[in-house]
Amino acid sequence: MKDQLLNTIAVHNVSQYHHAKTNLDNYLANPAAIGEHPDIVTEAIKLVETMEAAESNLQTLNAAYGTDYTTAI
Image 1 (spheres, helix red, strand yellow):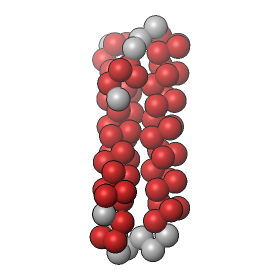
Image 2 (cartoon, helix red, strand yellow; image 1 turned 90 degrees about the vertical axis):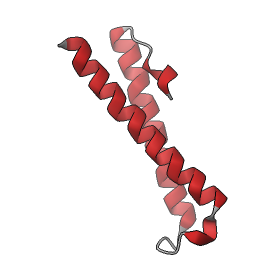
Image 3 (cartoon, helix red, strand yellow; image 1 turned 120 degrees about the vertical axis):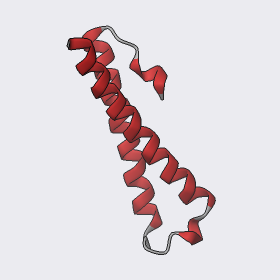
Image 4 (cartoon, rainbow, N blue to C red; image 1 turned 60 degrees about the vertical axis):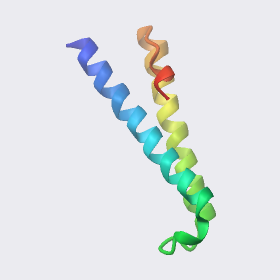
């Protein structure tokens, strides 16, 4: 059960990281196509913060439980 819970937490964070990165990649490639976000800089910063939080969470799991989840991002 412990491994299953740790894996679920890790997958959630990996997913959040990739979700934010995909959106940031899209903003960088097509900034004019993002009509609903007039302040693209603020939106990009939020995405970077989401990526950082997810990566930090994975590093915390690694330190606390001797895992290596950061290789998934």
